[in-house]
Length: 370
Ligand code: F6R
Image 1 (cartoon, rainbow, N blue to C red):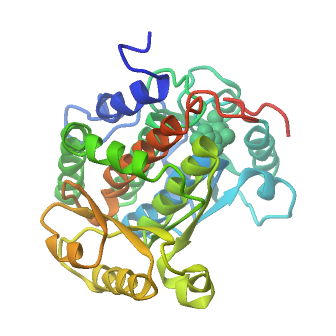
Image 2: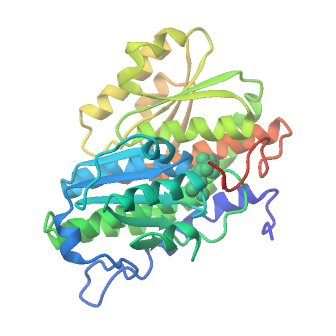
């Protein structure tokens, strides 16, 4: 059932092109417009939403952070992301005009279930983004958008994360279409870029996986790894750090690259591994230039700078000890590609340490206690 792979996680990483394609499939009506068939919340309600709050835990919360960048950009609806267990135990401002988006692979995470109940008690509408048909969270929500990643067996989430991110984009585009924030041809352009993602993930798996594996083996004794990213690269950095902690039991932290000079730069000395997610080079905006200068900053302090960058960005080679190239896409969609090398890195490093990547210590696939 591992499909010839040494672990479920390895198989699930390779399932990702299919998971992304399946989550995109069947979302278009005959008129070419985006349709979310399980979206049972009334259109007039969705049109009047004045705030979105995404609630989730762990990896699913990082998918939510990517959603915030996309939804605010496309729909101009203020969007917050909150860990479900924090949301639940404070007194958040939630009204009938708040749309709560609960993201959960299992649909059974008790912290998220309790947060959904808390939101609905206050009159908010809740949409679940979920991978498990008929589970508690979609059953208790007002609408659902199922991710079609297929069963995820390995404890560490991989394909479910990518399909959660895709579902968030679909929700954002749907709201933009409904509320008239975007013209249909703009939406179509983003959707056709999304359609290219499965093939691009395939290219990472075929072209870069071996390089990452060799690199992970060489670095199996690393004690601490820092991850830096900006914009949507920031949640990618945090997801990379989480994967490394849970699988390889290595201290890891993800930072917003701009935060470096406000403290974390003190951690950097000779040989410290820093993995930097370089944003999309399309347009070569100030975001891109800022991250390049972050690479130089850590490098100047002796860090071992490892870079995830788009193909063709050969200028980073001058500052990096290792570059993992991913295919080019637009800024907002880049997490679907940049995350993949980080998943492989964590898995291969844990494998090199002889750890069980499918069943890391102290963790359960679905956390059904608060
Ligand atoms: C990390 C991981 C966890 C889950 C979190 C939420 O690899 O798997 O952080 O993402 O426990 O689980 P779900 O999505 O089932 O609610």
